[in-house]
Image (cartoon, rainbow, N blue to C red):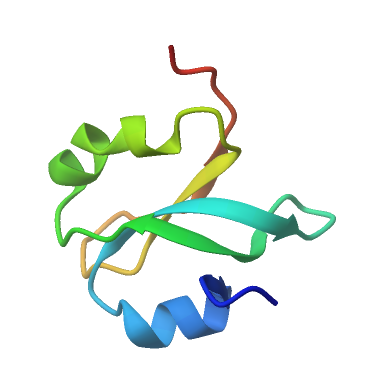
Amino acid sequence: MAANVLTLEEMRQRYDGEWLLIAYTQLDENLQVIAGEVLAHPSDRDTLYASLSRGRGKDVAIECFAKVRVCQGFCVRAEIK
């Protein structure tokens, strides 16, 4: 894998307690991130949302390793202009 590409488990270990914006390079059959490049990793959701432009032109996903009551990872496919 490229130097900046991490597996999801590596991301979980490195960025525990944070929200991640990921330019994914590999998804599984359920569209869950297997590997990718972390574009942003703030500790709060609002800051992550403010950083979405970093994903311009890339396939991105948001994963949440923060300690919140309701937290789900999901893939987002959007064209940001």
